Length: 128
Ligand code: HEC
Image (cartoon, helix red, strand yellow):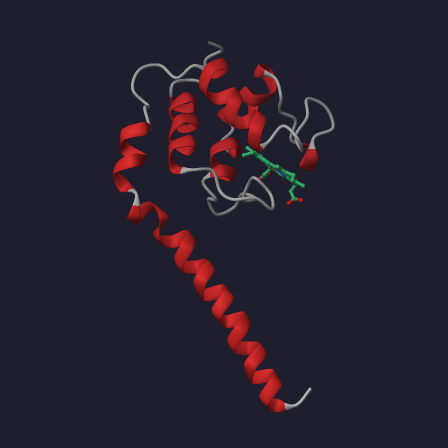
């Protein structure tokens, strides 16, 4: 490949990366109101009504009740509670250092979904 072509390729890939970066970074800034209005973390968070739907959509496909990826079993209350209490659930979805960022290969959970799960955990991972 000659030098000119290489420079063009660099520009194209650089451009794609740049556009993606802007897109993801600014979403929260562009829609701050809708996020706060629709995100209800008041009161007691229900495991079955609020937490399970999120985990089911984002996690259970890889983390089944037995033999889940990375030896993390989810998909039922007892299992979900274990990683809720040992810090791995929130560590992974908040992309904290020292944890594998989850869902693997997917977009990070919305800040609202993270907040809902955090509240469920800090309230003691109730089975409600
Ligand atoms: C596409 C498959 C996939 C999905 C979806 C996924 N995971 Fe994982 N998860 C993995 C794999 C594979 C590992 C093992 C670590 C590795 O090899 O990167 C892992 C590891 C973990 C760990 C262990 C992290 C640690 O620090 O020990 C936790 C906790 C976890 N996942 C939670 C979740 C949660 C919560 C979700 C949903 C928000 C989720 N995962 C979605 C594949 C997945």
